[in-house]
Image (cartoon, rainbow, N blue to C red):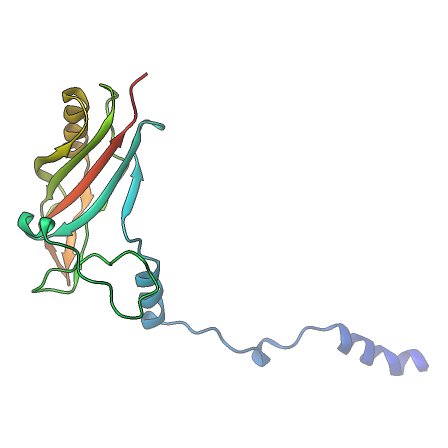
Length: 178
């Protein structure tokens, strides 16, 4: 008889609170969009293929090549990030950068070094133009970085719901070929 009286009390003490008693986590499109924006990296850094070759950094994106040379905008007051955020185009704050469909393939050549390129990605995600901006590398490394830039395919940049062509400032840091 005592067991019959204590059994419900013991089972109740070991049970978890009902899910309806727990507060529901915040969710929805607005919360998800805010989380995505907070998690967006300041700079996109991708390894080069084959592994150990180096890395490629997308430093800036703009609709016009001349805008890549403009100074970055000042950090917003109260922004905890030490790096300034990438500036959207002055006429359209909804510009989203193109996304590479894979790792840039670099043919290992030369002594390595840093190669800065301006790369134009068209509305279809194809690279249409590549211009060398600066380099401390030899000509074989510059040629390999340029070929890798031309060979990389992208999901195109978006302005709202529309695909747009943009220029990307890319820095290839190439390790010395073995």
